[in-house]
Image 1 (cartoon, rainbow, N blue to C red):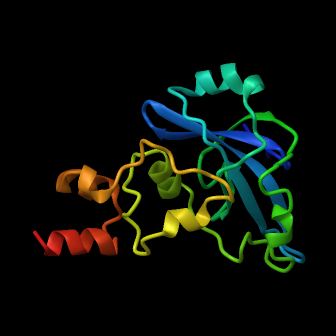
Image 2 (image 1 turned 30 degrees about the horizontal axis):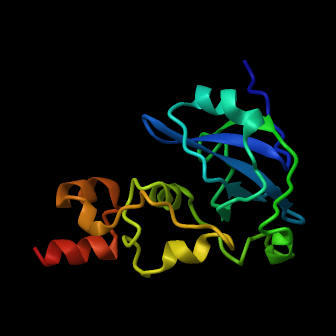
Length: 184
């Protein structure tokens, strides 16, 4: 049986699994088609909502205020094909804290703030599953947060994890992890 191609549209909401009991959501806020190529760039906005299941997201969806994303990123590929995200709904885009976010998207490459990156580690860090100070650049996560976003009270730092936990959650090529292991 042939697979049906899903046509992505701005405003689509995706469920994002952070771990077995933690889910959040993202919204496609910019779809950029690269002229003369079949390639596209996908920019997503992420929100300060944490759920225990995908079903809970769907139940609460109509009550969620999606006017203040915490992070906006151009991701490294198609949200469905490359990240396995599921579309759960479509909602209008109306970001009050970053009303002009599209002005920061490159007109030639479609990249938000001229870069693309994976969202997994940043979201897990924001929600306290990874260390806030686990990136090479000390204030890295602070720099990707949208204006006015407040750091959650449940964030964790390197000191809050055992070395074994850090080995499991941090990339093996992490400079911070290598430094910790060298200083044991």
